[in-house]
Image (tube, rainbow, N blue to C red; front, side, top):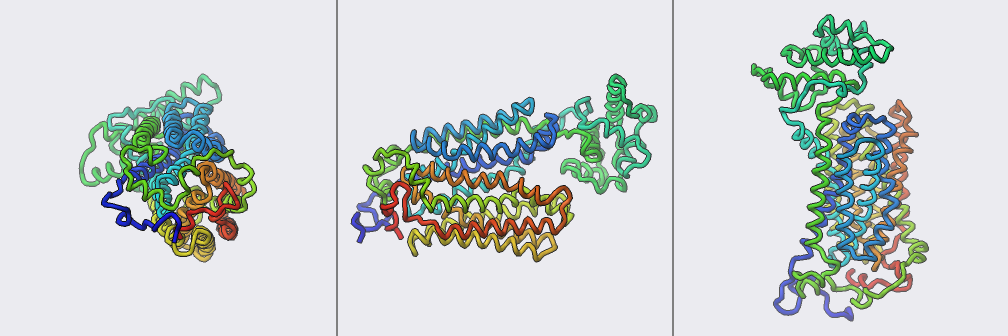
Length: 581
């Protein structure tokens, strides 16, 4: 029998009639909310990216730096941010992190140029770097050992939910911030490339949709749209272009079914078309707004989007939401359960069963750099996370492009197909906690943490190999979804491993692994882009799938060497938490 007394398997096993309080559940719930906001802020810019690019007049190279810059600072700040939470207390430091990334997220909405924009994005990466390591340290103090895997999976699940709702919520909010009474008339800044627009309108042969617009332009306006080299004349031509397009906005006959039915129109425009098809006449303001959206669809690379006006307030709203979450964190959390006024003795005993005695936990020890740098488990875990992210990042970056270029999937169907793997990932998150906790209880910590990681990484690699056997979009998408499912199925065990071996330095150790994982996420798109080239064929994509499968295979094989029974603080001391197995 365990020398610390009988095992407490449930609240009913506690001495007396004292029922444990439920503060630990509130702590986990707020951590989930933090995770959701974290991923919402991280991925909302991917949806808003083209609007940011248009509004700030940036080029593709600048936007690439904007999107990738986050992962660079996020990776480099992992270990320092985790160490700060271990050194100064997780509660205050985590609130500081949430405030930091929220303020920088809101700051993106105030950007006036590339330097400001990239600085804000760098700040978001630094602020978010400490979130998961610090929350892992809090969970290690607040969650009983027997349910660590489930709690870790639920917090990670919050992130997946945030990523899933980011494009949907951002789209609806952008639409809400461009209300029906928003001015729709063209101005000089309304054009992305006015010279290309003039050239399209004045060329000898037109695509059907462009021909329809050109034929409705007044004759005198069309004559004035010829591109000329003189700067002063170009200014005059720009004014003529603005006037010509504004003359089309009131027309009720601008849309032509035969010429324009293949256009990719926003939902608002499609609803207006349905009303017109039902015999309803649009009000003048509605007609002008519909025609503006129609012209944007006809000239997607030349005319700026009306919805561009909505991205700034959306980013500011997300920043304010993060500040609210930071306040909730300050209210709900304490650095230790004993410091929380609503946490009673029954809950304290339930949380602390099977742990190192309190005095030992608070011993002052130097930061264990040597044990970290000489830990075989931690290096193999870092390799595993690096290779896992090399395979996983394809699913969140290149999948939409693959579906469009190889299978010509229409935009709406492509959006649903792209979201399917995320939902499979959520299912994996939910099941992964049960898997990690159940195996640890049945076969011990060593194989209880090792086996889920090995199996899930190898399973994801096999899913990528299955992709090679399909040439239809839906079967391939389901194979991708299985890769996502297996990836997230192992997350609970990955997090719990850090808590098992981390001791007082869980935050820094989890940050170490996250750092290597995000370096993999930063490097993989560059590698894939080099493999694919500008015009990839199906065989080029298959080479990428093979590389992803190989990365997952290496990740699974490296996980064979991890050992949750050897803590970082001392390679000779066996963790007392192994007694829960």
